[in-house]
Image 1 (spheres, rainbow, N blue to C red):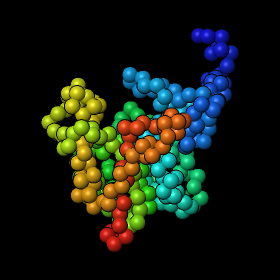
Image 2 (image 1 turned 60 degrees about the horizontal axis):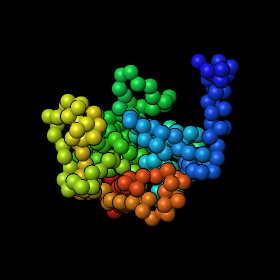
Image 3 (image 1 turned 135 degrees about the vertical axis):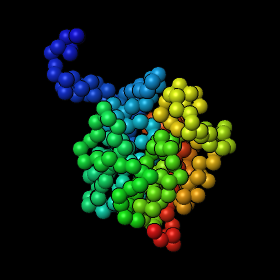
Image 4 (image 1 turned 90 degrees about the horizontal axis):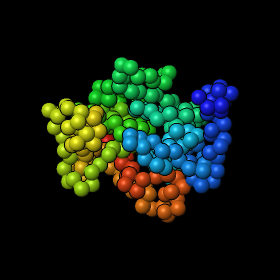
Length: 252
Ligand SMILES: [Zn+2]
C-alpha cells in the first residue's frame, strides 16, 4: 500500500485524485466539468472513455448532447430510464417536477440504486402513454424477444414522446444476425460481440423499430461536430443516436 493510500481514507483519496484530474483538455457535457483526460475503461481497456467526475461514457455523453440539442429536457417530464446510467440519472432526477422511474432486469449478485424496480421490458406494469421520455440504450441487444420489447416501449410512450433506443450496430451487415440457439458465451462473443448479447444488429435496425410502431430518428451527431469537439466531448464517430418517436395521431 502506498503512503498516499495509508494516510488518506478512501473517500478523500478519490477526491484528491479527481482534483488532480481537473483541467481543460476535455469537457464532459453531462456534468459540465473540465478534465485533463477521459480515463481508460473496458475490457481490454480503451483510452479516452470515462469522465473522472460523473463516470459517463461516450454513448451517454452523445445521448445527452442529442437530448439537449432537441430541447427534450423540460420541467414535469415523465421519464422511464431502463438500465439507468448513474450520470444521466443524476441529471434527470433534478429536473423540476420530473416524474422519474428507473427499472432494470434484476440479476442475482448485482446491486441496483435504491428506487430501481425489477423490470421486464417485454411486459411492463405501466398504462399506455405513461412516459414522455424513455431512455433504453444498449439494452435491446440483450433481450431475446426484442420485437415484443419494442412494442411495449412504444405502448408506454406518450403520443409526441421520444425513446432513446441506441444499440450496437454492425454497419457492414444489412440484416441482423440472431440465433436463439447460440447460448455459448464464447460463440456469442464471436458472433454478437459480447457474451450476453443475443444478436448483432445490422442496418435493418430502423426497420425493426418501425415494425413496432416508431417513427425513427437516426442522428450521426458526431459527424456534425468538428474533430476538436468530438475529442473534447469524448464521443465515438461510429456511435449513432437512434430515437423512436410516437406520433400524436397514433394514439396509444
Ligand atoms: Zn462528467
